[in-house]
Image 1: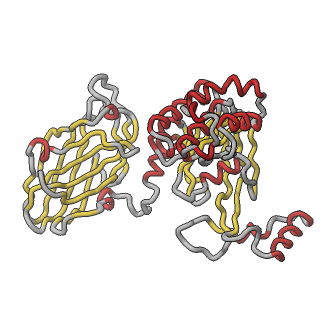
Image 2: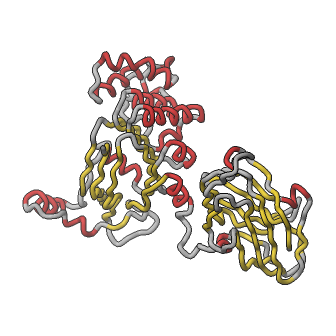
Image 3: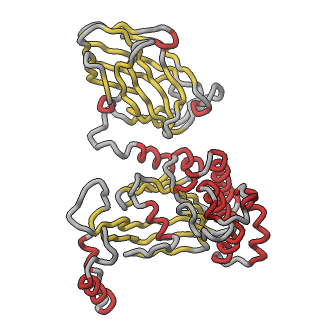
Length: 421
């Protein structure tokens, strides 16, 4: 059963004004839509919501043609850059504003935490706001009273419970707001970026509570965040919004990987194109990982090594170390090959053409998932010479061999089987 259904939903805004901007235009819109039953004429002049470029129209689509369903008990992460339409989508769902086009069908009560202080009256105490929010959600006073101790304990604001909310810090307000939204038993929980205001302890508690709400109690959660680690931990599915339109809808791992590489132009497909800086005496022509120049490749199940090859031209002789760093798709360092720095195995590169090769020994148990590689040249104990950050995405199918240490369970040093320069 679907808990939420978005059907061709769009939201059009007129920049800088309320309404259409003039009385005559407002009357024209009213006549065309309300009296004649025609389509709103101003929908045709709306442009894509690209905040970085000035368009030819003052009408922009904050959201356009959004269609997807969310099943009951599903946890969906809504991700995208600032201005992509994430908060607008949740405001439409929470009925803070109405869609310009399309329809949203909701089956169940919604509790929303869209911004600090959502649903709170600043002059009322924390206790009074809890009862007010419960009443708005259709709960009786007795039902709210039964939940009160849990809410206060989770929020950690017992000392300030009878103090007006206007005297709360932003962190305290978010704590209480989340506790109210989560413990008053809504069928659908909608949470925007506000958890970032809380401290690390509270964020961990909030993520755990949302997991309990979805997995243990079968309730639906829509979660917006720029914290990819939190999105991956909580969500099974990810929806990427880009300029008000759906760019991707699929597994959360695939969504995060696509989001992290979203800013790169289509021309960036070869590893060598990810080089961001290099010394003027080094000219890199080709980089191959896993036998390909493409910036995405697959590590097969049972594969024990990873081939790295770099070709180029040197204007002068130099000493270097070919460093390969494995990172999670949330940019957490996991493992590194740096034999020059750790073992004193510097490579002497002669003037002219050079070819550096490494056969990296992978952990016996390579965890299934996606990894990002940094490829770096560095003179051991001295300066960096070349950097290609986030240059390769590796899809690991997972190793069937049992034993060893999973790559995602802690930082480790890697070794090579051979070294040729």
